[in-house]
Length: 131
Image 1 (cartoon, rainbow, N blue to C red):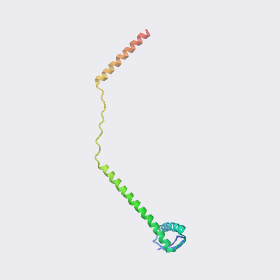
Image 2: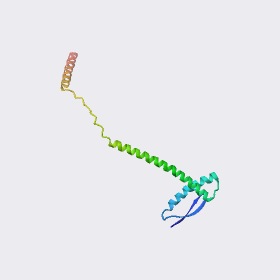
Image 3: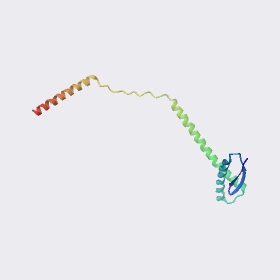
Image 4: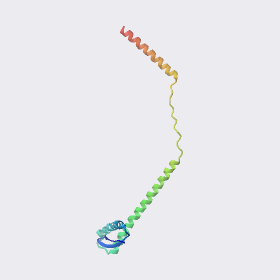
């Protein structure tokens, strides 16, 4: 079991940990050291036990706040998942009916006849104009 030296609040501590978990220990010690530095700045030099206790309590307070936020986020996620499932379980909306207008054949025939008459009139007018 490896022994590592960590520094918290300017003080060195020899601590044992499981093989391969040294980086977790150093990360945890760094968090505790940051809180101890805040205490040292605000209060000054403290007895070792008091400094570690206060720094641990500050970290615990921060962790409790984060736990509350995680619980709120999980509740929101659950509510959104329920809403999605409710929307998925709804029956599909009825297909929208689209009507395409159909031009009756009589109209097409009438328009063709009118076009032919217009062309005949135009040709007649051209002939009179050129004569």
